[in-house]
Length: 113
Length: 113
Image 1: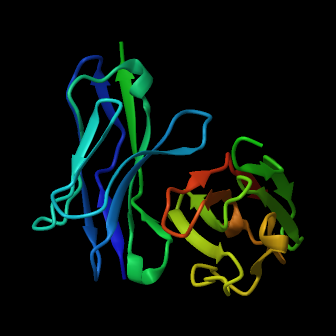
Image 2 (image 1 turned 90 degrees about the vertical axis):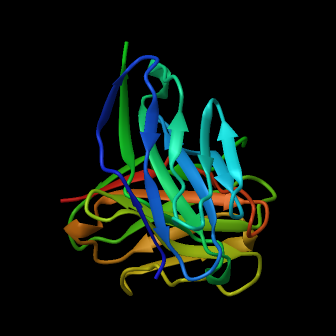
């Protein structure tokens, strides 16, 4: 079945550091890929998405590129802020399997001032 | 309301008791999803409703779990004879159509003693 693997946290960074969270997936078809973020005390929010190979999703300074050849969708941000401290989830949606999302285990990111 | 709402926000119950969790989707959203977020299993899909179609129940972990959606709006997730391993945060999401962005509620934290 479909699966998503992302790096385990926690990831601790200083403000203005570069952030990368690795995400790889296994799917039988051509899924859409997502990054969701969960800020402390808040619900899951969609951060960015990409629906086909080589698409780049971007939002709030975060970027991720859909790499079909490496089945990856790594999340990057060039200069993190304390407000980026959150748990980040990589997810896929396999069209043939309906609209359910398959999530990775989540990566907790802590940005220190 | 402006977003997906869930009630109660917290529920503590004794092993063997039945519980009902409620989800109010965003008005006009035809698709509704339940997910579970637990320490051992991460974020996992439970069930998906789309309009008047038969629900996708493929993620329900046992026959103790059931869900219904009345009038195409509010949904109730019922867990019968709760077990300690049912302790988790139960998340509800809705989308305007099956393949559009899913908006998540704040979740119900269930603790089974």
